[in-house]
Amino acid sequence: MRKLFALLFVLVSFAASAQTTRPDSLTRTKPPVKSTRPAKPFKVSVAGGFAAPADVPGNTNTDLSKAGFVYSIEPQYELTRNLEVGVRLEQAFIQRPEVLDNNISLATKAKSILSASLTANYVIKTSMGLKPYVGVGAGFYYAESSQQTYQLSGTSSVVSYPLPTTTAFGGLGRVGVKYGIVHVEANYNLISNTSVTNAASRLVLTANNSYFSVKAGITIGGSR
Image (cartoon, rainbow, N blue to C red; front, side, top):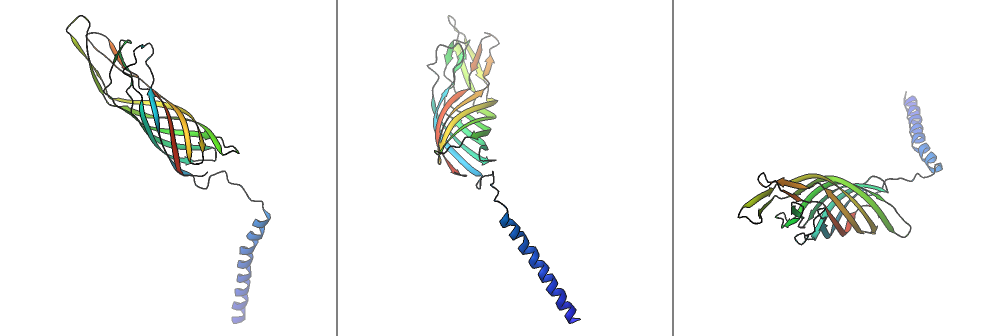
């Protein structure tokens, strides 16, 4: 009986040894498979720069529209070595155009535009280390309300135009280039206008929320 157990133990040991050594020998004969997924797919992009409001078509007085500073934070995930997706959180400190009857500019009370957008970039990698990219995105934009009043010409009547808080769905397009951890990009944010009509004067006050931006930043993490 002991000899039988000893023989079974030897056979089991031999079989286990064959199972562990055979895949290794087969693995060594197979060519290595190159993965298309980056080793470190998670990263965070931080950027800042210059933003300027887009003009209202037909408006000839843009003195009250002001450019300003913009910053963004964008966590990203690299799906492949050429495609990355993310969530861009941005705040642009601009004075948007607010135009009454398409020809009278008023100073906005909304001091910035906030946004949260889903983004996707296609990155082109070159042998020189430069990585041009193009991207698109879509999300929600927010601006505070702007309470405006205007005195009608030739009268003592003061008309109120309370522009409501803006919570609008919009999109963005961008082009840029990366080198190492540094990147530079240009953006255009297309956002629907905010408007209000006074019941007495029947004049419409329109705020154009769209804006341009140029930013430079760095990327923390991810593959190089």
